[in-house]
Length: 247
Image (cartoon, rainbow, N blue to C red; front, side):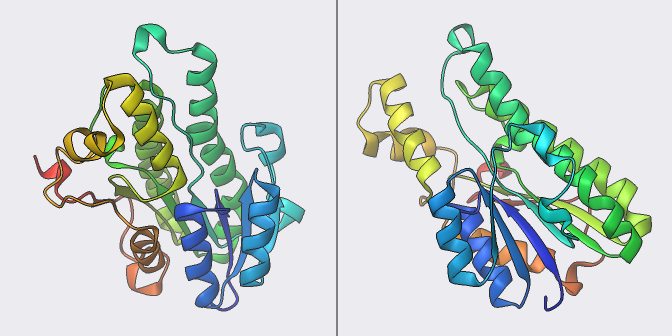
C-alpha cells in the first residue's frame, strides 16, 4: 500500500480503527475521519496518519475530501444505531441514520471517483452488515441504510469497473465494538432481558458460531479487498456472520 492514500470513516474506534491501523501497517497514508476529535487524533497520531474531525451528517462538507487529498482507497465505515418499534421510531432519528450511513457514503464515493478514474485504480470498501442482507425487528433505519448501501456499492462497481475501480461490501454479524455494546444495552431494555441473555438468545440466535466478530477480523478482509490480489473482485458482499445468512 506504499504510495496509496486511504480515507477511513468512523476511525476513532472499533472496526474503523482496526482498518486504519491495518492499512497503515502496510504502508498506506491514512486519513482517519470521525466526529470524536480526541479519539481520531489519538488513532492518527499512533499510525502516522492525518486526523479529520468531521460530522458526516453535514453533507455539505463532503463535496471534496479533506484538504483536497487524492484518495486511492475509501472505507465507508461510520455508523450508528437506534432500536425502536417502527410506530415509535422518531423520524428525526431515522433520517439521521440514513444520512450518515447511506447519503454520506454516496457523497464520499462521488468525491473520490474522479481521482481514482484518472489514475485507473481505486478501491472502495463499504462496511455493511448481515443486516444489509437480512432484517431484524426494531432496526428499521439501520436495515434500510445497509440495504441501500449494498445497492450503492454494486452500482459503483458497475460504473467503476471500466476505470480500474472496485467496490465491495463486508457483511459482519455483531462485531465487538462500542456500537454493539450499546446495542446490547438497548435490546435488553426493549426485550426486558439481562444483557447476557440478549447476546445468547437474541443477537446470536441465528449464528452457527456463537461469538462476536473481532474488529481485526474485519480489517483482515478489508486489507485483502484493497490489495492487488482482489482486482477481479467487485460488486460482491462478503459475509462474516458465523453462518447467519446461510439460513
